[in-house]
Length: 536
Image (tube, rainbow, N blue to C red; front, side, top):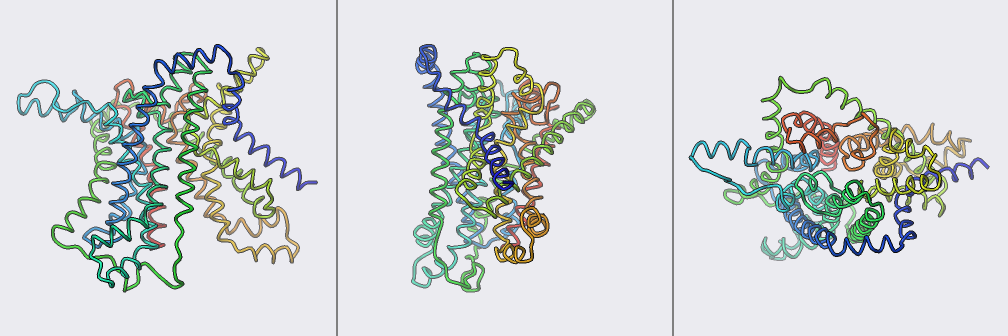
């Protein structure tokens, strides 16, 4: 009885996590004449612009992250040159930079009134604009390319490290020149990894709101907020959210398909670092070119944005809102800590249930809980607020709207929908390293149920659980779209105030919370780089 009750509880939690997505599908049931007129008007006015801008942005970002990610992964994996060991982990640093922070940093430094153009006009007597406006689609492509390429770099590097070294050496022994080895061996091996990384980068691009809003780009995500908040039209927002969700689902399918193709047979005992399969040593101009290929992405994606944000921070140090900063930090840490604890606890429960009872119902609950990470924050917001609106239409005296929009309940719900999958993936990777024979031995000694989880699994899952909580904590700290709409009253977070101050052109004040987010984001990047070095 208790087992079935526990399973029913897990299924209920999984359904709660997928309710925002289900409510978007339910919005089509209200497709009446009024909704049809709204969609018709949107199709004649804004939808073509939203679609065209989103397609151009995604195609450009896909090309950019593929070239940068594959180029850097090939350089540090296939070749040996000065600084290679440093570049292996430094190329991950842009993962710590929220895209909207990079956008604010470049805008502050490169805009018409920024220090670069002002200095050039004063030095050479020039007038007018020296550089073109950065707040446009090409500027957004630049920002996304150099903040999201690590997705491609990480997967492509793993694929090349595990599979390319021996085959490249075999091709060399058969007389193939270096260019042919790269073209016909390394690139085909890394192609599924590149496709998976590009799909992940595009999902982040579609989920973005900060860069699109700040640059004034009319994407689907920005259109969802305009339809809901500016036009006060729930139907239009729901339809746009459904279209965006369908696009993300397609990308997710492509990513899974690419991951399945990343399977190659290897001989036992093979090691990428064996003496007969060493990287090719570069010298002279080729070594300088490799350093340039690896150094420029770090410069554009991490070093320059940090320096650009430090300038206004140091210049306005005496005027910084320290009292407010403490309050923003407290709100961010409280929401992130609560969400991380709940998401990790739910992930542990789901992973344990799947471990001890791998039935179809349990697998279904785990899959439902894993869907949320691919759903953009804007879609989650609409999916949560739609049922609230329906309830208030039926029962106007209901207080459900207050509990969802005026307390932490709504925003924590959105965080759990979005980031439980992150915790679940980390916990499941920890369970994968626990042999099943330990469970059998514990059962033979009379330890079952929660005793098995507490006395056998938990001591072996502490590191994975800590990593899961840390990842969720950092993701919640940086999350912007859902937080912007669902945060409780007088509970601004570091991400929200960074966006608001930058939108009001108060970039000097925005530098402090922005750099704080960068420092928080560095923690999982450091842990990831340490893990990669240990595997190497």
